Image 1: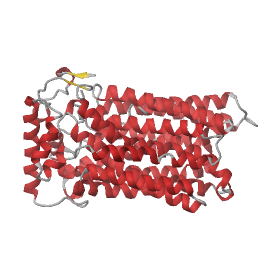
Image 2: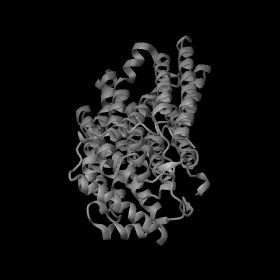
Image 3: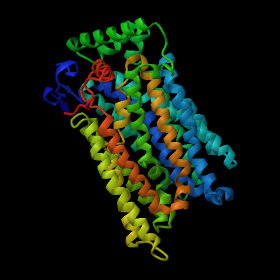
Image 4: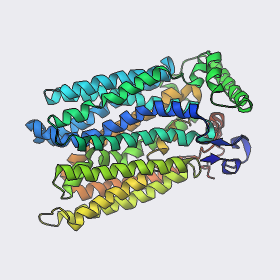
Length: 495
């Protein structure tokens, strides 16, 4: 995938993307190595999201209290999200003070501990404790990985590289379903499913030891020679000087501010408030449009559609997870061509239609006495799930993470990234903790109809508030928010 000047966003004034030599997605193996290593954090994120959906089927068999209590089932799923909320909230501060590399290493340690605790859990309470540990690690990784990748990526391909982290998330979800299927006939089924999650964390911990710190973080911490050494592996000599000048300018602004950014500082500056409102809104709508309703409860939803076999439910869920990964690859290919805003709008349009199909299928199924395997309503529900993922994964999957990795000034990137990721996890928690209860109140069809209504609100939010950042440097994005805060350039920029 090659980016040329004709694909740069065109506008007059300060937002005009600077003239650059062509940059290929595959041209720099060093950047791809950094991206792949950091992206293992996304793999851990995705694996934990997906594995509990299958493990829950067998946890219910081992613990009668879990089988008899839907709230306890929701708690086992959602306590990892509570941990992630804590990890994401702390992750921004950890990123700014200790760096992206140490933040990743800490996340790996927590994930290893949590996976082992879950594996040996003698009762639901210890299992929940392990889920919290895993969640804190995932929360830190969800903040750290996109920022680490974005700060090492040339602006022309930054969206695609950050979206690679989302591909790792969807790949982790797909892997979790494969593991779930592999252990369906093995004694201690769910313990293996949850325990093997420690393996990728160990791999990332070892690889990350040999990775450099983010060049932008190094420069801001007055470790300029180390930062330049990293940049020399990313850019040729002509481009290198331009990037160093941009870092120097950002560093001077940070020095003139004379203080360490706090969470309250985000609310004091109008342009930062605007940026945070946009980033946090995208993160919230990513969850409230239903993605983790599908990924956490996919086998359960399939069983609700009339497919009672655990193995078949997992197999059909594997197809949904595979579509998620394929769709993310499409998103990587499109995000730096079509832009973030257009991709999100197209994605939400398809999500709305798919949710209507799901709502209709379950409404039809509820009217069919004794719905069985192979019923028309059951297969229509599965088709709706696949269609939902096909539309969600290229757009609303990667776009919120890509936008949040690039819309904040350097001094605010860690704090705002952590705050917006926390919004994502809070929204995730609400979805995970309430889905089965809402289904009990209004039915599965009614639940998906509610989510369809939320997708309409998400479409309007993107249309009104999300600007286009395709191909812009960090400095250009910062000036865009200043223009908006002054009341100029308020229209979302399209290309």
